[in-house]
Amino acid sequence: MPDTNKIYDCAIVGGGLAGLCLAIQLKKKGHSVILFEKNEYPFHKVCGEYISNESRQFLESLGLPLFEMNLPKIDQLGVSSVKGFMMVAPLKLGGFGVSRFTLDHRLSLIAKKAGVVIFENCKVFNVNETNYISEINTSLGKVQTRIVCGSYGKLSPVFMDKINKPAKQYIAVKYHVKLKFAENRIELHNFKNGYCGISKVDNETYCLCYLTTAKNLKDNNNNIKELEKNVLMKNLFLKKYFNEAEFLFKEPLTISQISFNKKSTNSSGIFLLGDAAGAIAPLCGNGMSMAMRASKILANLLDDFFKNKINKTRLLDSYKAEWNANFSTRIKAGYYLQQLFGKNTLTHLSLKFLSNKPKLLQKIISLTHGQTF
Ligand SMILES: Cc1cc2nc3c(=O)[nH]c(=O)nc-3n(C[C@H](O)[C@H](O)[C@H](O)COP(=O)(O)OP(=O)(O)OC[C@H]3O[C@@H](n4cnc5c(N)ncnc54)[C@H](O)[C@@H]3O)c2cc1C
Image (cartoon, rainbow, N blue to C red; front, side, top):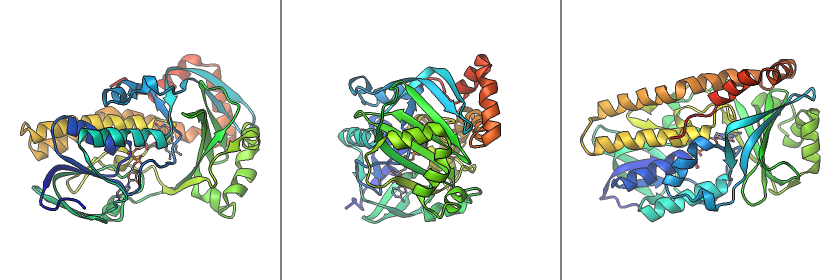
């Protein structure tokens, strides 16, 4: 049970990448941190599990020994159209593959070792935010804190619902598979109203993960197998992989009600980061790297606040300004790229055009990968 008499410097709602990275940094800077995660580590999460190399140094600085983890290095991109064309390009900055099962678990252990108080299997129900001391109601009791950060991911909890008014809704499905597939390559395969990514992660396993509209699933009797057979497998590359792969999960891992609407860096004084501050189309902008980068920006500003170098108004304003400076171009690029995906003819023609324009293609790829931080 949380200590109800203690007032923490910072309480973090959600222990994915954004929340865990923020917790570790704040604790290392000497502040008291409590983090609530509704699941129990380790657990699987719907995600393509490709991390841009921009985050490599940052993760290592938190104490994650990536160099020892024998992770696949990914430096080649293949994108296919339903009509059977595959565009191939080098990924200059590149990235690596690691499952969220491993990554989030390892980070949670680093956080605990650093002294972050982590409550697992603990859902946050409500936050009463005030300018001074806020109260957090959780399934394990109440906690008091000076600052509240929301890193609860794509789905806003009910108590934050007022800022989540989704327009178009998406669903995502993920599998871990064994497959004969180049370990240095990430492939994105288009199908009607969606796309599917495949790349290697740890443990000699491949992540196969796709995103599509909720309508696409509905049109296939809300049946994932029918969706895959009737829609995804129209792309012959996907048909081959689905037929050849050995599927390791008993059931597919799914999430629904995903939307890519614009959100905000704070709501009623709660600082938002990661997908909670605005999810963008996956594989168009490296959401995990953006979540980690946002945690670094916020950790530095919160450190200034706790050391009384800036007040809360300045903290809120500076966070918003830095967030926009770092992410707004990337989010716009992700949005436009998303428009080119999942359309049979447009996607096909765009891929053919880009495969003859290597410089333009590299420019577009670079928009989805940031600088090292
Ligand atoms: C299909 C798909 C593929 C993707 N592929 C990639 C990829 O290959 N590379 C990449 O960089 N990005 C990818 N992304 C994006 C990436 O997954 C996200 O940007 C990233 O996970 C954001 O991290 P986060 O910490 O904000 O959220 P999350 O990792 O989702 O963490 C949020 C956490 O909060 C917890 N939580 C939620 N509500 C509560 C509550 N009320 N109380 C307590 N805990 C709570 C959840 O259990 C969860 O663990 C993909 C996204 C999708 C949908």
